[in-house]
Length: 613
Image 1 (cartoon, rainbow, N blue to C red):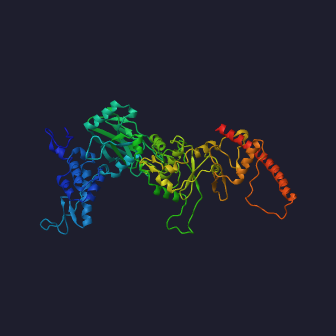
Image 2: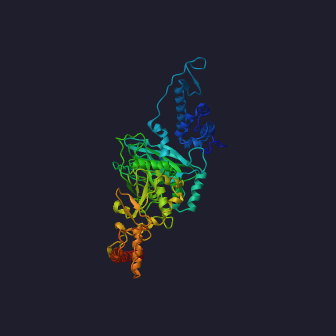
Image 3: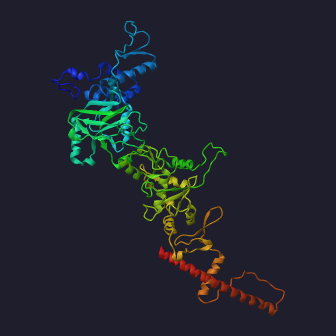
């Protein structure tokens, strides 16, 4: 017997062989009377695209029902007809009307519209065997689960088909035999376009780098982890009577929640154009469904493109405020909880390097992040897609780019010397969203790192940092670039070992660093920078040091322009100021010499710092 694989019949082919696999013409015409709601439900149940206006949905189903290949892809004639009849019954029930499959386009209320006859009672007839029911049961959710199992493999859109792209055999449940044994034996059709696509790809690429694969996937229907493959106990798989390697698991050795089973790739040498056969058996009481599809490999950039774009800065700021215990709208004063500042690490827990694109999963409520590129590269091999911090499931669609820390890293890189990298691995963040960099290694206490005087960056200023769709920083405002070099110098010299293990100290015990204005900590943990203007006393002391270096006594301090007229004009009274002036001169000279020695020691220490830097 020669089968017509195109569905349009042909010379030399019996018409009954083609018509037996096509959808009933009256039932296929009746789908025009259904609503968009029912049409989308039918398409979802058959694993076909469901988007578009009603005429497009009707055309898509009509073309599917008129093609023998597409009917097989959708699950077979009984499956398609049962799905359409179920949609008609649901619509009639919602309207409070009657529907009869003998006249699928007619709905009526009360008596039968034909000659006032009563509607015939439904006589379901003999029930089909359990094997047929299991094989014909549609599994609309299995196809979506297979697609979500491995984001690195997408459904191939070549050749263009009306049904779901890449499907060679639609999701089919295994047939239960005696006891715990199950089996599935079913033919599948590989078109000439699909075969030549696989053949061309096999000639151009090595087996590990092939772009297209014919894959067999198995899904446990009641699996608690929805997006993963799961092969049954003692599974054996054959294609065209040739055995294929499959994950073998003994009964009782169930797979844990963190386990993942691989797909089975069918070699091109075992396939043929036209009809092929699939056989699988196992010793497992659980329900499984198999899918055969042509998959296309995705690159790292394509998988990264599946991650949603980062949120705007207002949403990122609100997340930080909630995570740090900031008060939200409608909170009572008695219930308000405001935590202290948080020290956030910018290092990825996977690579140990500073994140390029900080990200987290949607289920994470903390501010801990990981690097997006490193996370995707890791799951290219392990395929587990779990958060390294909390263990929550995090596939590309479930990962979000941290809009706040991404902007923070953009500012830190803009302030660096090369404008591309940064040595800052931690930042201090207030509940309001204000932040500043923290010097020192991750292991050091946060309190010791704040002596560098890093200025706070206001939250409103961060609104001007622009991010791209993939989390790249496109623009940093000029006012946020002004601290370029200042903090990087502080980080580089913060842990430098000075000569004699003694760090030079300036005024008030502040560590003096070359090129950085020293700061001191006042009460209330508020860092205040010293002004460039010096007081009059400091100016006088500087002049005294200069005069002492030249070997001349320093000049006396100028007196106020006030003339005091005494009661006596005697010579003793005139000479008294002269004696007091001599005593003041000696005291000033001694103070200048002491100050000169202190200044020389400080200058020598600063020279050592500059030499070490």
